[in-house]
Length: 232
Ligand code: ADP
Ligand code: MG
Image 1: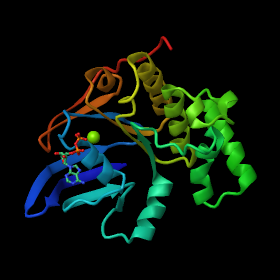
Image 2: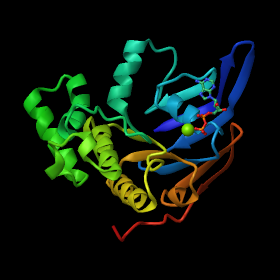
Image 3: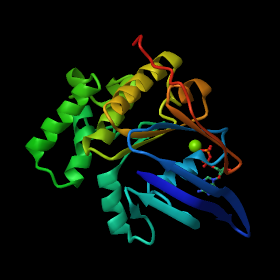
Image 4: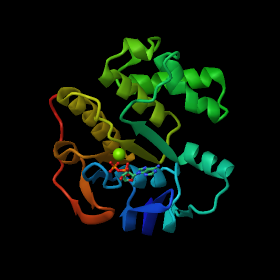
């Protein structure tokens, strides 16, 4: 599904350069639930942004679903991103003046899907995350956990091959974090490939594999016994 080799990334800042990813190799198979762990500043978001085609590496290769991601023009990259990748962020990134339903339907609009079909699909995904009755509410009327569930429904609406979540529980209390991770586990059990960036051990332990980044290199990559959340 995902294969990267010898990936490097530096940020240029004036005359100096910050080497953030220093030769990353890893592979993700379809159906995995992988935590990318590491302390703040270790390069997790940089790596996820490259995997999400929101940024490009300086060196190394990236294959997504057997297609080499390199030198694509922005239009082709955007098309790819929309078809293959779903994103969830710590800060939800919902559009404040649009209802939950409209937020979830938006990626379908960009895929050129007709309005009726968009609304039906969006409602199905809201139902899937337990928010069917909240479809007409604005983000400001939802709790943090509900907002993140809307964001997950939006990320899933276009049926991406991979879901990329950058600190999805970073703005939530621990009980709400468990709810969101229970939903991520459910979606993964239905077959979706998911990568979760986190700096929290207990969140990483709810995944099936932990890739530990430190100072821009992978220091550990292991399958784990997943902490399955049952009591939500
Ligand atoms: P993490 O997500 O693990 O906290 P990041 O990937 O966000 O780490 O950042 C890794 C390092 O790169 C940090 O030192 C950060 O300050 C720096 N960095 C991230 N994005 C940029 C950028 N756009 N320009 C310059 N430096 C950046
Ligand atoms: Mg980060």
